[in-house]
Amino acid sequence: MPAFNPLRALARSRRKPKSGLPVLYGLAGEYKGKVIPFDGKPIVIGRDPSVAHLVFPQHYTSVSSRHCQIISDEERFLLEDLESKNGTICNGKRLKPGKPVELKPGDRFHLGDPANAFEVRFN
Image (cartoon, rainbow, N blue to C red; front, top):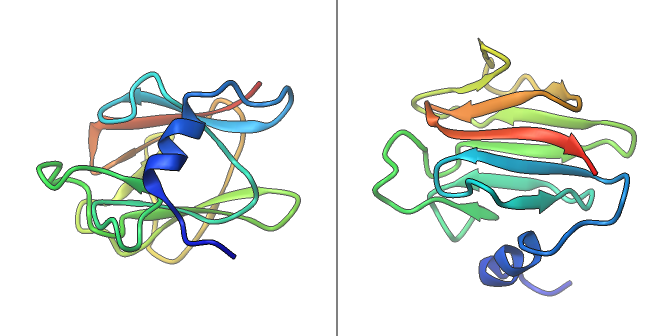
């Protein structure tokens, strides 16, 4: 399996996903206006490019190196906080680290600060 390339992932995020697939839509912050398709593989979000698939610049200090991840169990998509310093907030509730929650269309979450926000959508 080839290594993950964040530049390639960002280029893919600019393409329109196939109809009916779940996507992350950037509401605010580094990924505002971007569409990030789910492909069933874990998506780690954070500032450390050696482990994160969606990488925030180092000056986004409210985002941890490994902040959270989105995982799939083939039927559902789950959001999990990875013991981030400033927390992952989904629909107004702070996630407990290591306790994934199911993501559904319309769910919104942010990383530490509402300025780093995403929404789950189906296209």
